[in-house]
Each structure stands twice: as C-alpha cells, then as structure tokens.
Amino acid sequence: MIVHCPHCSTRHVMPEARLSGGSVAISCKTCGHHWTEVETIDVVEVPSRNVPRVIDNGDMPELEARRLAEIAREAERHFREARAKRQRSLRNWAAYAVFFFAPITAALMFPEQVVAAAPVTIKAYQKLGFDVNIYGLELRRIERQHAIVNGTRVLSIKGDIVNVSDDARKLPWLRFALEDDSGKELYSWTLDTSSRPLRAGESTGFTTRVQAPPETSTHLKIRFAKADEIGSNGGS
Image: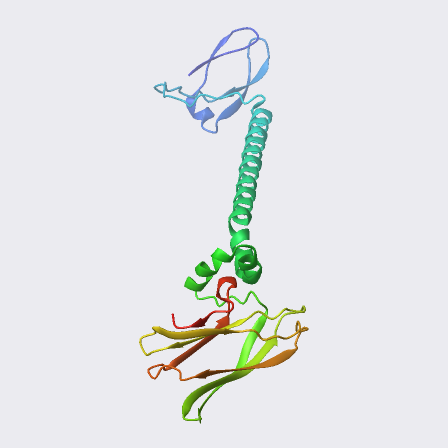
C-alpha cells in the first residue's frame, strides 16, 4: 500500500502486513518526519431510515404542570357546585317534609286537641281506628244487673267515671243505648251525673235504672252525650 508523509508528501510503499495490528509508527526517509499510520477502514454506505424525530421539550414540564393544576381546580369547582346543589336539594326536601308531615304528625300525637278544635275530624279518626277521647274521661267497671220489682223487670247499670287527664274536667251527660244482635238501637236515654268537676286522677260513680227494657235487647252501649242528645229519653 502507498502512504504519504504528512510533512513533505513523499510517497512510501509499505506492506499491508505491517498494519495488521491496526497502526504502525513510520519515519519519512526524505525529511525524517515521524507519524503514525492507521489501518484504513472501508466506509459502507447504509441506506437511510426513518429516524424518530427529536422533540424539543423546552418548557413542557412546566406547561404540563399548569395544565394538570387547571384540571384539578376545575374538578374541585364542579365538586363544590354538585355538593352545594345536593345540599340545597336536601334542604328543600326537608322543608317539604316538615311542611307536609308536620300537620299529620301533630294530628297523630294530639288527636284530642284536633277533635276539640274541629269536631268533624272525629269521624276520620274513627275510620283510622283511633278511639279519640276529647273529654279526658274514661268509663270503667261497668256492671249490669236485672231484677224484678213489683212484677216488672228492671235493668240497673252502674260504673265509674275517671279523669285520666292532667287537668280538672267537667262531667258531661252520659248516653245509654240498648241494641239487638243486629246492632239496631231499640232504646236510649241520657243521665246527668250531677257531680262537680273531677280533678286529675279522681273518679266518681254513677247508677241508672230502666223499667221494662226491650226483651230483644242484647247489647249495651254507653258514651258521653252530644249537646242535642241531653235530656232525651225513649226509643230511637
């Protein structure tokens, strides 16, 4: 192979075997310059390929951080708005429930006061199975006795009236009714208990008698009389 002195450009013939080690030290016989000659490497041309484009990130980390922060703020805003909407809805439903159910609750808890203020409501309570006691009084220990007096059958009824309220109560008249097996009323009468008002927890007794009650009467009903029934006595 031919090598050239890099100083004086003198051409020298050198066996290729001397470059078997990759490089060799050479001295120019003309000018005495020393240099190192390396083994020639054949350059092979490689067809071009599609190399991925290098993206210059620049400020991308900062931009991405700002974008994520904005997304987080937007999500938090939507969450607060949704929570406020739910709270408003719950408050509205609570107000509606109070408005709608409060009268019903009061009516169930204080039926006596409701009936006292609006007597017509007692029928609604009765249909619902409520035994509304607007008087604060109860009838207890009711007894019936039959006797023959001077050849006439006499029905005697006695019992107690008890004040179960927390206040003094004036005693209303009592109404008695005799009914047959079908529930038909055969005879009725009223009784003035003629007693002073009863204090809370106090009781008083009553007794009433009927001569020759209907033979077919089998049931007795007693209740407090209405205003238009006071003083009545006779069949219905």
